[in-house]
Length: 299
Image (tube, rainbow, N blue to C red; front, side, top):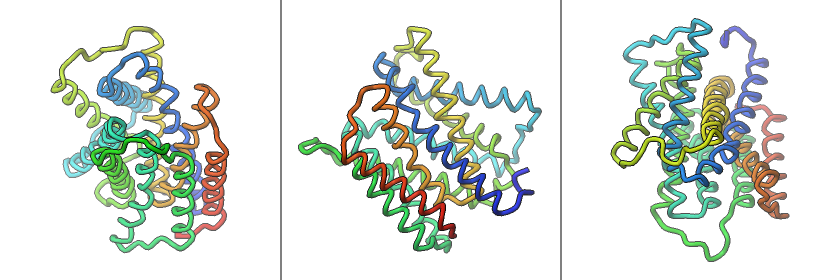
């Protein structure tokens, strides 16, 4: 199905998928903030997030009679992809313990730069338009999420946030470039990544100790966990894989700018967080960079 459409339709579908991936992932605060406020530990939230998402996707695949089976050589790489995506989430959450969330967001958005550099290493050279879009979006993110003066910054937080960006970048590049999983559908790829993440977070929580349902006390908590599993996890991962395969990891990573933009919009409209002039300028810069990339298609 994916491989029978013409190049222009693939590009349009890839751009739409990248936009949906960014917006859906940006809804994280909508579901995660109430859970954290309720005292749900990060590892508990992540294990249910990935576990519920895997169960829902597996149910959908059963309903559609899609195959689950993969070859041994494919399975190994799918597990690696699952570890990369899961570690990206894990490193980001842990970085918050050492540095302000705004700085963490800025550092994580280094991933388009990492993607472009990895592609250069693989001898796929982004055009000057793509580099300009990357630089502009990163500048916009600096305006959106720069930390306040006097904020405490610790080296482990910088390392963790940068590792989160690097993990995410390798995930995108492998999904796009690996011939080993080229014939694995987006549904199957995402399912195995989610199952790997679930196993990782269950293991880490077991080592950490404590209840596996700590802080989950109300129907609203379970509802937020399900929402977290569906929107910023399953939908985001499926459309991310689709976009990376259709338009490449570099352009997909640029469209990831809709992640912080959506998170800021949710914070402003639902949680009463302030929207400053500097942030508004940052949003305009980011949107301008994305529009420029779309209007000037290049490799």
